[in-house]
Length: 395
Image 1 (cartoon, one colour):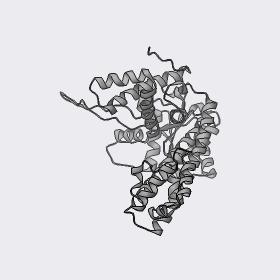
Image 2 (tube, one colour):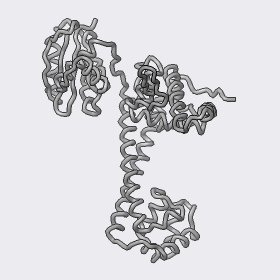
Image 3 (cartoon, one colour):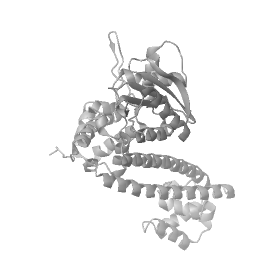
């Protein structure tokens, strides 16, 4: 039987804690402890002081808000100390605080007591995530951030190409393409391309495109460069060269991460890879964000966690027909499920038939894609629970 409830409000440099008894009595008023080894020892000492030597970890429930990386070390410490901490959605804590009081009181100490109250008032599942999944989550989120930075660099490159050689995209060379990167890194400006020898220009394009482009493409580019309206700027040319160097660096980093992620997904041996359209990158994000599938009792809970729940608005006789998704869950999981649904609708006949059925009902493409992502959630939930591979039902 649980006797003690420990609520912790997490911050960057210090945390606040409140300890309640099984009847709601305050066993220890809210106190602060630092985010270091000394502070963590203070927390354990406070729990031991109110629980006594006879109590074991099964009689003590600990809980805290999800606060990104600030709570990671504390959660790991609690788990290593024999506790099973429950991590709450901050929105859940906010709504609970508003429900128990009409006052607009928002302090760290009040939040700690509020979290202890939630632990006492409802049944919540503790965090049970394997080390392998934690590592996979770190890698996939790191990759997401690198891709975002690389994308911003490509936008900068596109802006500078518009100034230094605006006619280039009309020849079919896209920003970020290997041929474009090689060309503009060597010759960052229409004036330089126009003055370049045709054999050198041909070699740059042929090597970067792996033989796709040759002398004909080089002559077309050189001819257009001679008639370009581009301005000449040493400063912009230097900036373009450095931005291209950044893009190449990020591409190498992302490729290296992909190999690491692929190796980890292969080691996990997930059945998700048997779904046509889901590759190792998408499967990695789904696995990392879901964590332990056993903490969800039914697919609807997983759907809510992904933030794909439709909102509902009803008042009197009015019932809103078109309502947006709630989007309160994991952004990464929601993005990966929508991407997976789109790819599955292309590569898997079962999902393609379902998508076409929804569109035939008059639904917009993205509305139909939302319905397909919810169907995919049910399939993924079943596959992870049973560890069964995907079996196509389409003839």
